Amino acid sequence: QVQLVESGGGLVQPGGSLRLSCAASGFIFRNYGMGWYRQGPGKERELVTSITSTGYITRYVDSVKGRFTISRDNAKNTVSLQMDSLKPEDTAVYYCNFFPMSRTAWGQGTQVTVSS
Image (cartoon, rainbow, N blue to C red):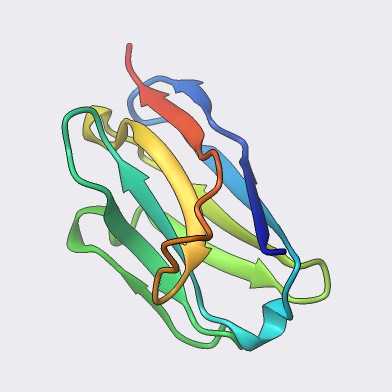
């Protein structure tokens, strides 16, 4: 059974940093591309960043380029998101999922709130 468990969210001031982690189980992690998605208040869920199964190729939505970094550890079955220079508009619930997304693999997500 696929399980994705996100952690690391919290309240941070504008300009601050957070590191999110996602622990994966129930499938052969190293075979799949992964992504981080987010859903802000009153907004649709959107893809923020993705990484290929090997970790060699990453992509980012324009709004986070240069501020966020996705990485993965295939030995530990984890995918991480380093978020720097956070802005209030980054406030959202962040989820990890496969890339392309699987409708049945959503976890609980982790709340990130950027506010002074």
